[in-house]
Amino acid sequence: MSDAKLLVAKNVSVSFKIHGQYVQAIEDVSLSVRPNEVVALVGESGSGKSTFATSIIGLHDLTLTQVTGQILVNQRDVLNLAPAEWTQVRGAEIGMIFQDPLAALNPLMKIGDQIKEALAVHDVYQEPQYNDRVIELLNQVGIPFPERVANEFPHQLSGGMRQRVVIALAIANKPKLIIADEPTTALDATIQAQILDLLQDIQAENGAGIILITHDLSVVAEVADRVAVMYAGQIVEEAEVGELFANPKHPYTRSLLRSNPSLDNESDELYVIQGTVPGLTHIDHHRDMFLDRTPWLPEDVRQEVDPKLAEITPGHWVRGNAWRVFKFADED
Ligand SMILES: Nc1ncnc2c1ncn2[C@@H]1O[C@H](COP(=O)(O)OP(=O)(O)OP(=O)(O)O)[C@@H](O)[C@H]1O
Image 1: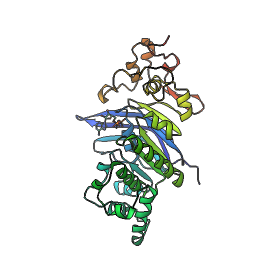
Image 2: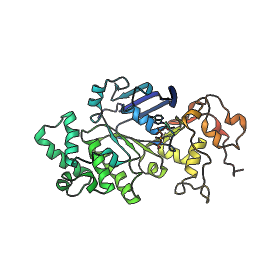
Image 3: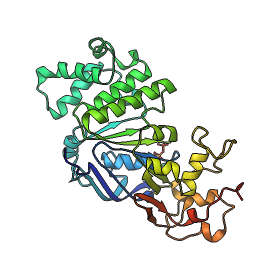
Image 4: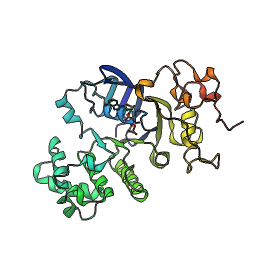
């Protein structure tokens, strides 16, 4: 298998047109994914994770959105693809698993027909083989009685089964790059664990690379190889998963870890990060916006201009210098 990167995104910025003016949602985001790798993109709601994913799969409405930078999928520049060309790339080279399986499925179409439709777009399989491939896929994602389920409608299935169908659709044409946007958020804990296991199996079988978008660090600890932490439209820290959990540096990463009771070893009390991710019109991309939520830090630390991502140890990147002096308000 080639070790060429499945995704190389460099300096990707996205702006949305709001009341006639473009407002920047993500700035200078770079990320790469190799075969067999799960890269987690973590951050609170509003940090820009979905905006970045949507630019990789070309689903932004370009009359209202500007996307700049470079996005290579399997070494092919996808940023300037025509809509017809996107039809060839989406599904075949990139598969997307959405958070809400009900919204991702057509309520009026039988499961088997939806999968056949996805197969027909790329026509890798000849028509007589579609039925076999549908059953094979439903088996692969762990759906019992696949022949029966193929003839059912989405509302006849449980939430966990529906999410398995969404995964079957995403992998139908064997894309090497899979984007999973909060794939387990809508599911209860037991089913979450099963779906995460399934994603790992698929990755092992297909040699796929996965971008896993989540706000849940327990999910990251379980399945990711590498983690990029996003805040207010920028990556603030990136490292191998073990390194990130053992040596978190950026104040935001440390706060996220501390606010997750199952991962925090430092204190007995549940930590709550004060404040919220700022809305788009309140983001100053020349500052580290998270430091507005750590008002106890000295003013000069919080006002650092144009904090850059720097590699502090091999493979471990941190934005700015606040991490060098950061302490929680209750630490000496
Ligand atoms: N089409 C759009 N038009 C205008 N603003 C948008 C659009 N899509 C997203 N935004 C804004 O961009 C910012 C980033 O949103 P995004 O959905 O990417 O964050 P996220 O980290 O994926 O959050 P979530 O976990 O809730 O999906 C938010 O402030 C959001 O309101």
